[in-house]
Length: 530
Image (cartoon, rainbow, N blue to C red):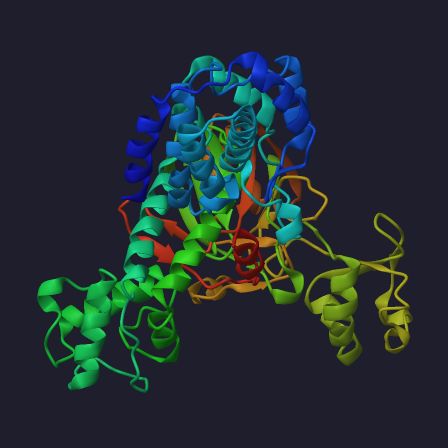
């Protein structure tokens, strides 16, 4: 409602004549365009503004010297819409601009005209930059986000918008053009409205609450699930934990990444009691992450969402394969970055990283030197160096400060990488691979690795990536695996791989999902957006 109130007021203001002509405004623009602020408002693009107005010979961009141009009112009417993107419109001088518009209407002066012009230009450059690649700088709020952003040139975007005269369209075109962003934005707007009227009720009973239970606790649970849309409103009353309520609990657990056992245990109760306002902040954080991302991922690409423990192969906007994954544990977190997958390795050796050898394997070898032989691990002087006899090494004297060797595990059923690994060379030494312990995929929380990503369906993924090659057929692929010889297989076309970090998203069917902030990366970003 506030946006429309602004719009109608500013259209009226737009039609009000101004006495100041271009030649009266130019000296004022020359003076204020070199400033770093206008009144209490800091100019975020002061150097760009100086260049912009110098190129225009200090003529105003948002008026013709006698009255404001329609583009001025259009920009001002567009600023409140930033709130719908999870951004604060005050960042874009909204209140000061509103005041300047009113002052310009009632008692225009060249100084007011110049300040108004300058703030409108700075507001457009700030908002266009934030729409295109986010309000925050990823490196400042998330040290493990390494995905390059779109290159923003706010001055060029400003000139293009002014030339076209389509201010709002120019701004909207900068937002992520994907259904996932639009759906998340709608969910954020809905949650904001819900939070504004009190959100959902807090549950105070002690867990667990099981199917078949009855009483006031069940009524409270029903009312809570109705508000979040997990239970139809028609089923909001009733003291029995029946099959309908079971289904609602299951739905809630599933979309929050919890064990879907239909029992309201401690974890489910904790998730139910996260306030709507906190969930809205979580959505705003993830909207910002979408703005950090490039606008085109590639017609064919892989996405791994780390907090969801989930991988998808996308082709032409459609998911053609998805699976569970295992990601890095807390002390060995998997970073967010983009790579290019160029080859696979069948029956891989595992070149044990030194830190893993020191921290994980040496204690096991010290307890039983036979551990090496049982697990097919050999000892070398260095990578590619001379093979050594492990029995001739005094393992008890080795540790973090004294380990002059290299360990390598042979291909086979016990190999830590399984039967295949998928390579997208990167400075983090992260790749996708099979695993000899598939039982771990049955768990809901799957952060067990040392940073690399174990995948649930490696052979299905390999065959899709190898389409059009001799190994595309199951028979040929199985034969290559059975050779038990390590072999590099080049992909016919490189495939982009995106390791992402989203703690909230909307599925294609409209289901809003939340996940725990696995690596505690949400809080700092949320604070930066305040």
